[in-house]
Image (cartoon, rainbow, N blue to C red; front, side, top):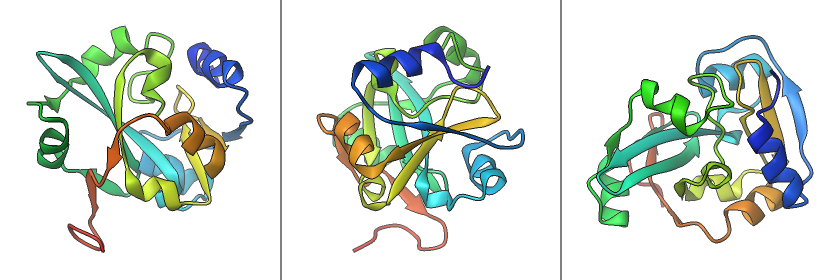
Length: 163
C-alpha cells in the first residue's frame, strides 16, 4: 500500500514536501523508529481517543506515553482510549494500527505534544506497517500550526514534567 491516498491528497493540497521511508514490518510507531533507524523522539505516533463529543487524535513522540488526564484537563473533556476496531471507519484507507499522525487529514480534532516542535525532522506512519512519511520540522509545524498543543505525554526515561 505504501502511503494512504487521504494522506497524499492532504500533503499535496498544502504544498508540503515529504519523502517516503521504507522499513521492515512493524506493529507500533516505536518499532517503526527502530526498524527505520530513526531516533524514536522524531517519530510522531497517533493515539485515538473518544468521548460523547467525538474523536480526538493525540500526537506525541513514539517513545512517550500519553497522559490522558492531562489531555482531558487541557481540552475540558472526558476522553478515553478508542478501540482498534473503531479505526477502520475513521481511517478507511489505512491498515489497522498504522494511523497517520495528521488527524486533520481525516477530519479529526487534534492535540499534539510540544516536544515535537523541537525535533529537526518528524516522521509519521504512512498508513501501512512498512512505511513512514518524512517531514521537515518547518513543514510539520505548518500543518499543526492552528491545532492545540501542550505537554500531553511523558517520557518513561525522564518521567513526568520536563522543564
